[in-house]
Image (tube, rainbow, N blue to C red; front, side, top):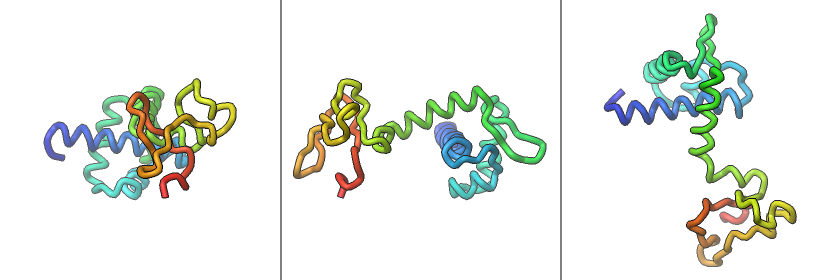
Length: 138
């Protein structure tokens, strides 16, 4: 891998892929080929990242070549993954992250996100934008 920043970015991306595979893809264990297929990166780079993640205590490599996230790795990966994809968190449920918003009790039609006809949404810079349904993007 290249410089330290590039290495850190690739390592973080692979770490998030491991979390996705174990939690969202439903794999209790995953192998290097699973990570290669999902990330599209070279096997050598992924192998180096997985070795580092094991060394740091975030992954556990089993004798059969499969990996699982350690308890420390699971918590850290969850935090990083959720931060990376926080824009999408509310969209699956049709609710924004404002606990005072009416959409939590009345549904997505009552969400206080400001709709702007020419741009579809007027972004509120005080909180992240949440998409209530996919048809609002078209």
